[in-house]
Length: 305
Image (cartoon, rainbow, N blue to C red; front, side, top):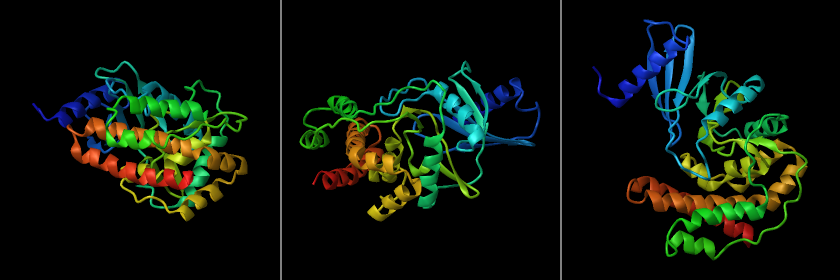
């Protein structure tokens, strides 16, 4: 009898796949642990005519900036599957033992390798898609985005250096320039969540979507801190312009230039929050958040100059 956690989990998931009719009993399978987000357990299961990702969600995750929302991810994949912008939805088992389980087709391909034009086009397709689904409402007003940042800062000590730095450069809020309609927003569009499938990009890890301003997805991707967290180098300014050019929507681009500072500030507050809370448990990860903070702060200062 296996005692290794991976084998225990694998056995449980294979039994679940059999019970739900996605896998024939006694079929030879190959199971592989996947490196996914920070929160959930993902594995790839391969068998004749089967190649799926089985994602089991942890229910004890509390993260106001990037919440863990299994129902919303299943909903997003159902909506996006016909558009080819996400993995293909297979099934969702919200009452599975140990936490909700989402099953979707494995996306064969590589993590984003630098095609900036494809990123802009992916975002444009996503944000243009008319959404009739009931997703959560994201903050779009600068005052609300800053309030969310302040909430994160208030959860760490007043003398923590990153908090002191951010409170000294708190940006003044402007009114939102206006939004004709809200778009479906991924909210965590780092390069690690983009898979190159043939000539197209597909977005994975839809665990915290919402309805909001496309500026949020664009800013998240071009965020130097987010790039660092996904083990990529920050994008130079000319690369940012290439993403905007391929997005090809002057209204959104104009709004991006006016509003991006508020999202950068919110990411900074999140990096500070994570750095503080991981310092004792995972100092190496905390150090990575420190690097993300410094890179993001540089952009904030440039935009505020």
